[in-house]
Length: 60
Image 1 (cartoon, one colour):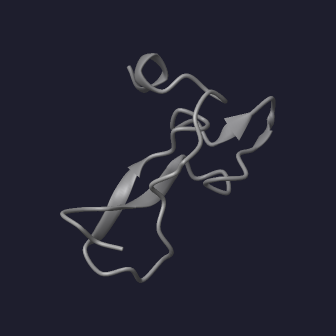
Image 2 (cartoon, rainbow, N blue to C red):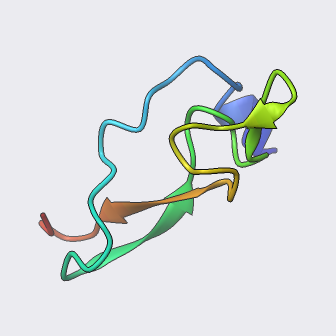
């Protein structure tokens, strides 16, 4: 289902925040759709984890 909502390679993680940001939580990487790979290589946005940190409730 994640691939339907976030097709691989179609979106950047514009909401991503640095590790340690208060009130941030894990979210599916928009660029790779949570797979961790784009064209057989690690996704640059999530470093191959399929997850990014995004603000929750005004964090950042």
